[in-house]
Image 1: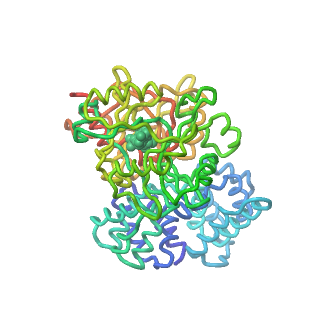
Image 2: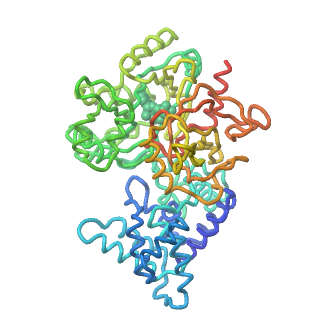
Image 3: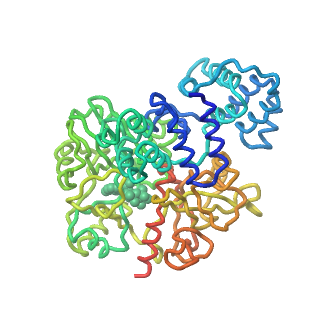
Length: 582
Ligand code: ATP
């Protein structure tokens, strides 16, 4: 199949702001895609070369792409740069340049999806001496063989900024419609996705097999599982009621969740958004590799500790371990402690359907003898009264935890689900809502005074899983240190989009710039109020009104561990609002 067909679909998608239309374009494309390249096509639609946990990443530097574009078109780098400064996107620059030179272009070879995919893979995975020249040569040759429309999307893919607004859930809808004719089957595809994290593979199974084959997808070692999540309760009484009167309470530590897969010496670590971060925590990987035990998948919360007194350090310190460079040095400055809290797979057996209390016993029997100052099981206590919860909460806070997790002892592990089997209870900021919220940046207003040339206020949004849409909730301008603001400005300038995003519901708000929803910030606020301006929970409490955060303030934490779809949901915001009224 020709890459041109994909480029034409991308062009249609870029021009629409309607999610329904977007889904329909995807269905039309998937219908005509041959089964043997459907996985590659799905990855390209996602702007990727494979599932996040194992593929090489695109996102080649602008400088390299500019050089290739200059070689392919004969246009000077300065001319390209000046067009880029005007247009803001190298893909669009390529489109305009190649239109200008259509008469002199002789296409040498038709680009197929397969050829493009394989070349992009070579570009992304070449490294070491000579790799720069090689990348430039590959990109130049792709441009030489493509029309203006093809090069526009080739370059967007190569740069890693396709920005078509297609999320996993939109693709899941399209796959359900295309292969089963019924959107209701998205549930089945979603469960398979929660376990396998690979939509390309699911598409291929659907194209070559059936829905039944998708149902049989199960847990596999070294393929990350989407984590089970927690609901939030207003207070201990509410939590105890919701969980059925008796539960296992655990410290809730404010670190980063990691999922560890081990088979013999092979160990891999994944974040809650399924990124492979084995190289960021080499000491944990080594500890598990050296551990003489059966194959397993376990989960825990990793927290940075002060090497002098072993006290927990804030989340921001841990995020230093997420940098690509100087791992050895940051490892010494920010040592970490791993607190295990679940076991999902052991000795060849899927443990997800075992009750939580049984999984905990297994965890104890496997790790009982290996506890040390870098690895422990999370503190746990059986509780059945408010007093017991409060007492355990006090202890948790003394230890530097942010609160408690209450877990139903009979609950199974439900990948990707947020339900009342797990409930989080956080310490109350005095007089404020009980919990911070994590919101995604959707737009911005330019700053004034000291902030001229930067953003003065950021528009934030919550997420609705039901319709895969982001809804506005507040503008935030306080809590930002200058260096953080500079850094955000840099990151956001790569995310600017030029039309309403198909998955954002902005209402009547107008902003100076809009972004591809990507960056998640932790926000604190004393209260949620009703507002005619924002679209979160619109009409759900009062006709014509949505919800807004009052006096929102950035906590200082950029939630690099969260994907935009992991932001606080509209449902959770409504829940917090209702809890406030109690
Ligand atoms: P938050 O932003 O409140 O930390 P979250 O949105 O990341 O939470 P939730 O499902 O609301 O995710 O809360 C569960 C998170 O709490 C887990 O993803 C994990 O990172 C963390 N956590 C800390 N201690 C525990 C524990 N004992 N059991 C399970 N998760 C824990």
